Length: 269
Image (cartoon, helix red, strand yellow):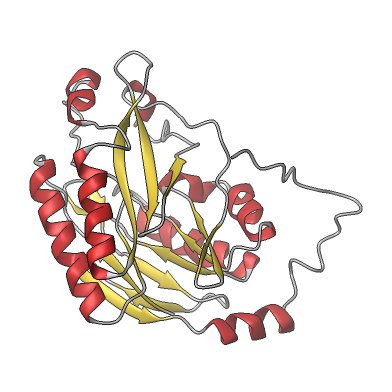
């Protein structure tokens, strides 16, 4: 399966970001990609000085113009789009950090569970956490799972997706720069791939306060793509037969001692 990820520096102007996103969708489709994934905060960059109310005014509903335009682009270009928006909530001018799986059939929603209240940041000042576990989505008989950025630091979530038969995990991110942040990013992406026998696609924001370094990792932990710090699009052919081989030779999911420990896999839809 040929997939694309986009590394972008989102501006404060959501219409400019939407225009650029549609251009990338067209480019990915022309190059034969079946899916394109964008970073977290695609809709707009939210500087620290921006208030919760100001961000709320930028946000939209799932039925809003931003998602509708992406849905139209997905249909016109026969490609599945994974994108992110600030989604209006009913809680004190706060918004959800929402990832969307968009194709010509449906829009599937995942709202970020783990807010980045760490290392000097407090996303909960502007954002509200989701309350439903992500479920896998089928694309060409391959199940896709979605996480968002800080979720990567919680291995339970990736494992739940793998137990729900995810073969590809997509993690739109806006990974903030700082001490050891690039190292943490690389280690966790590779760990999530290895321990679950999955491909991991991690499109990241670049510029502003973010590290870039969007990556695609294979199930054995090899880095297939590292976009460094430049904006642009990366396209990689995922070998799903290779994934089967890795899972056969390194059957971590099968070798779990679920008779002694277990993870709650009662997914909420």
